[in-house]
Amino acid sequence: MANSFSRTTRSLAHDSSRFAIAVWIMGGFLLAAWLSWFLLARITVYEVSTKARLEVNSSAHPIAAQVAGKIVSATFWLGKEVQEGEVLVELDARTEKLRLQEEESRLRAFPPQIAALQKQITDLEQAMSKDHQASLAAIQSARSRQQEANSAVSFAKDNARRLAALSGSGKVPLIETLRANSESQKLSSARDALLSDIHRIQMDSETHAHEKLAEIDNLKRESARLSGDIETIEITISRLKQDIEKHVIRSPATGQIGDVGPLQTGTFVTSGEKLATVVPHSELRIVANFPPASVLGRIHPGQFSRMRLEGFPWAQFGTIEAQVSHVGSEIRDNLVRVEFSPKNSKESPIIMQHGLPGTIEVSIDTISPAVMVLRSAGQWLSDVNPAKQTNSEFKT
View 1 (tube, rainbow, N blue to C red):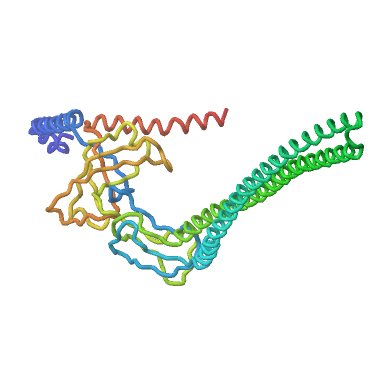
View 2: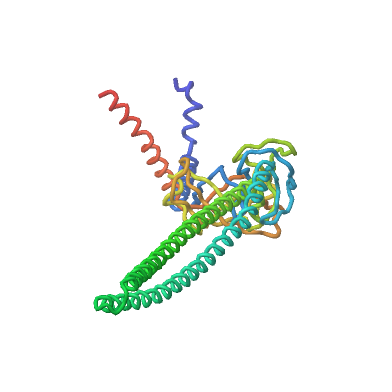
């Protein structure tokens, strides 16, 4: 037995614990260094959005057809510089233009008719005034004759009364008395006739005046109706002009055509169909969408961020540095909008242009690895517990 284990015995006799102690010391040192890093080191936490793109500060303006129609002319192309109000597309509006010409022709015919009616009204008013003056003169003349007849009747009655007194004494023949009475009655009848003429003249004057007033009222109503028709036609003309203007598509802003649909003369477009997009000249911004849990309460204006463009590999072209400028407070399509202000660098080889897509990461905090592990564990537990609770509820 002693011969069999002699080598092992000798090896154990010559073995030393210094190497093991050194290994343990080295391991303890590495463990202490790792714990120091784990507890004391600071690392930056980023929130990343894969839905980001460069946009102009002034929103791009879509060009859409307000009405359906056939394209008569299209005077724009991709990349063309356009001015606000410039005509880009014209749609067929011949029916509306013909209707407009018809209404304008009707409108031109109304003023002469109204002028003729006004002249008739003026002539009737003048004739009525002259008739009134003539009737007043006739009445005055009849009243003068009536006064003359009254005097004659008074004289005839006095004369007949004196002759009747003398006839009773036999100084005047009876025939003279009878003649005087007859003359008095004749003059009285003539006076009564004059009074009737005065009443007739007054009635005729009032009748003619009422007839002319009625005719004037009819002419005024006709003139008012024509004026109302003029207003109606003017409104119709304004509406037709608006309809015609809807067939003319103008540039909503000064800028560059950034998107064009397949447009050709004779193509029929529907109402609301997008034909092109005008990108105004303005400073660029970065727009990104984040899940609500990643944004609300965590991303604030002023935080540092970096954008990596899809068309420009970041290892070769680098990234675009930016700063958070605005953070949305409302959720749309389960996402929150965040806007960034990029920092322009003249040395950057990237050509910044509207519409470039990419990803952006926002520096939201600086924490130790230990805190990050605890957060991850807490998030994992918060994701797992609801599922267990739901399962237990279903089991119950």
